[in-house]
Amino acid sequence: MATILPTTITDTVRPGTINVTIEAIGDLAETITSVSATIDANEPSIRITPGVTSVSIVGSYKDAFEDLLTYIERGSSNLIETPKVANGISNLPLNKDFYQLDQDQRGFVRRTYTVTVNFQTGDPETFTLTHDILNSLDGITSFVSSYYN
Image (cartoon, rainbow, N blue to C red; front, side, top):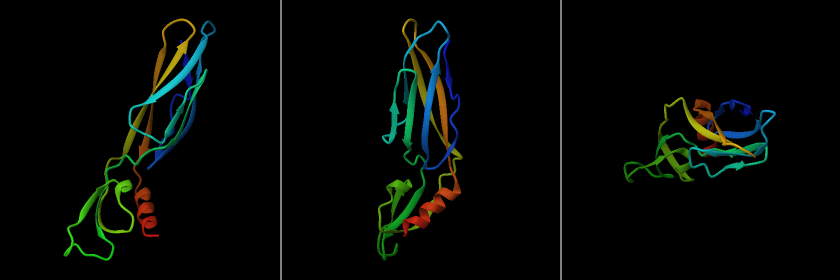
């Protein structure tokens, strides 16, 4: 039976990045032919590169938290314009005045990776690794301060 290293992925703070190489180690009688991985979510900026004895996972996650930001046109008022709501900081258009933030209160969002180890003979083995993206108040504070700069 094969093993993988590392067996855990260190948590990251939102929006979150990952940079890990997972190595498969076979028993003496096993010859590993490939190692690959999949992720359980649509993450277009995560690059998974399979290899003969390892798989590399690198990239930045989309912001998975559902913060609600109520905004209007810059210089306008909610008394003369119907406010709009953006779901997630990545969906807030540039150059708007947002005046209400309902921050997602979840402590973390988890991404799950399934690592598959293939052998010259025998059935493949699969392993599950999780990566927690922590919701930090500092992350939203940083976004707010940088939005108006």
